[in-house]
Length: 239
Ligand SMILES: *Cc1c(COP(=O)(O)O)cnc(C)c1O
Image (tube, rainbow, N blue to C red):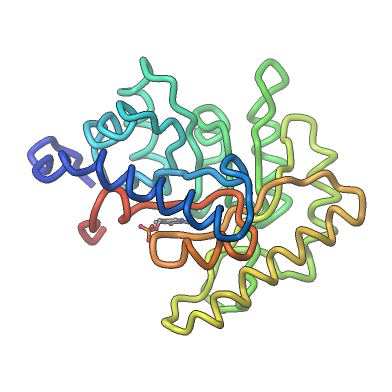
């Protein structure tokens, strides 16, 4: 996809949308008696140009999520001067692990051991470990990325042995539905898998769940990282 500044109209509203999201996040945390710092907002900037990212950065947003490796690497390089924490949240092909390990701080979307091994090898020991989450397909959709819930513990036990990765927790994208009870139950399931890992002595602290339309439900179910795209940057053009 071509990223040009001619698509910049409307980006003036990014700071105010971001503040709205941040306020909404804090309000929901308060409702559930949670600490203000207990969940973090990841701004999902896929398909938006560096200028849009800068708009959000200038009002204090430092964590950004990207889905497409090639597009992301171009933006990361053009924004090198900024102190941004980059989160990879998209599907991972094995021939892209080198670029991901080189350019990102976090990866939320690991669903196979082979990918984790390649990321660890590519990261090398001279850098901080790559912070990673296992993506879980809790709703069991056939087309969906993510490991089977039954594989989570075995995979986590393998991943914590990899030298250049630091397993932080679990991520999910629930089935697209208007039935909020279904969404809630997917998030509750991820939280319970996370609790199981902790009970097994695996030190995880991250539940990456919740997007623009289901952020409030995710916070109610214990999310520690919400990944917000449209709520901050507006609607995306179709890719
Ligand atoms: C695009 C995307 C998001 C953000 O979705 P919005 O609905 O725009 O908030 C979050 N997580 C993942 C994995 C995505 O691909």
